Image (cartoon, rainbow, N blue to C red; front, side, top):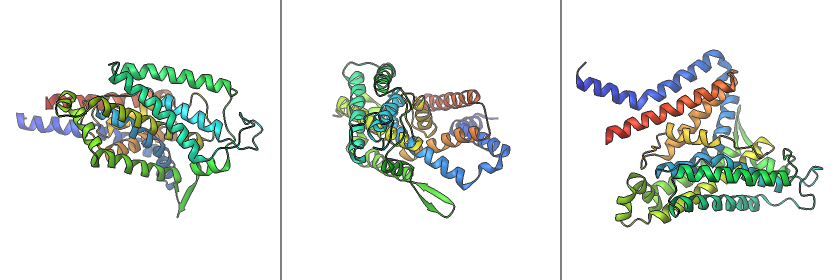
Length: 336
């Protein structure tokens, strides 16, 4: 094999190896149980993907700027618990705040998103002002947020928070029926989030600045981009997306505990990398993130559907993440 053919084969491997692995996994799942290919399962996968898309859209902007966020899951969990305690039905005998009238859904969304924005801004300040690497900064806030959530959860009774107001349940569990297919309201919310983030990434100066910072922060700074302000902006925005995702997840599941959101950051980051958002920065697309989430959720759901042990699922998902990052590193090394 000559050098040109070898280079082409190597390029082909870099571009498509991960998708071949995922395709083999999917075919294995289908071969084990052909009933996996049903409208009901597709509807369930799309609904589960929708919340994770919203969460992944938040972390994708950080990866785009050569950052990351390990506090994703804990922020989702805090938003879920806060929303759950404020939206219990007044007839619920286990209502954690018996004297509190059920708040309106828009008000609770604003409240949890404000909390998310503050936490995201905190991450941004630690990264930009204190000059702590994103990995360590968000590792610290992950523990802090989990501690705060656990204290709050203990304060309100330390039991699964459920018995939600009918309006909240309808907002998060409702759906349109189209033939034999159920299109959930959550999927529509995810579509709105996709449009918003696509517009930010592709049609605003802020989005262009994010790509510039991710490509080369120093060059962006020399070109007049306020790197600190833009990073604070994207970290704050990420917190809003995590919080809204947590709000939806509590309602979708029907309950919330302080452990909700555990390891969600792994799925979100993996989905972004699978979707082509590079850890090297400056490369990625919203459509890629969406596809990455759907593929990863498809594998998650499928492995559970055919009864694969959760421990094996961790091994498989971890291997996919390592492979995705390794391929991304190969692409980046080649460009250098």
